[in-house]
Length: 119
Picture (spheres, one colour):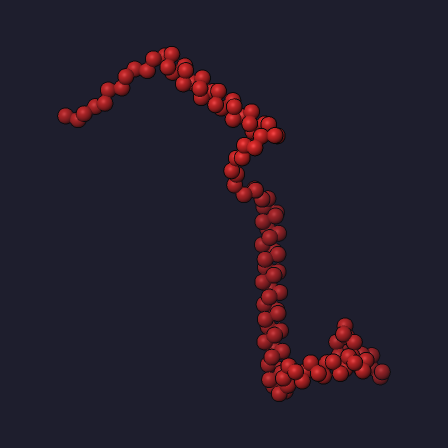
């Protein structure tokens, strides 16, 4: 035979007393929530974000990835050109400084594209 725990019947007064304690505690917690001066700190989760904000974050992340990929491809192609023509970074820097110094190249100008034919 299994042992069965016999529960004592709870007195109605005891039930009422426990209910009042719980009700008082709940009311006090609500008052603390409503009180702007209360230092009662309730841990909350992260703020709820709208679907539009999440989609915007996705678009920005994709744009950033594309930009990083373009930069990587540019650097790779640039290094390949330098290797193909046997130019090191120091020589290139010296050439650019010389062109800028003599006014033959403006910093915002792309050589070959911004020049007017016949000039």
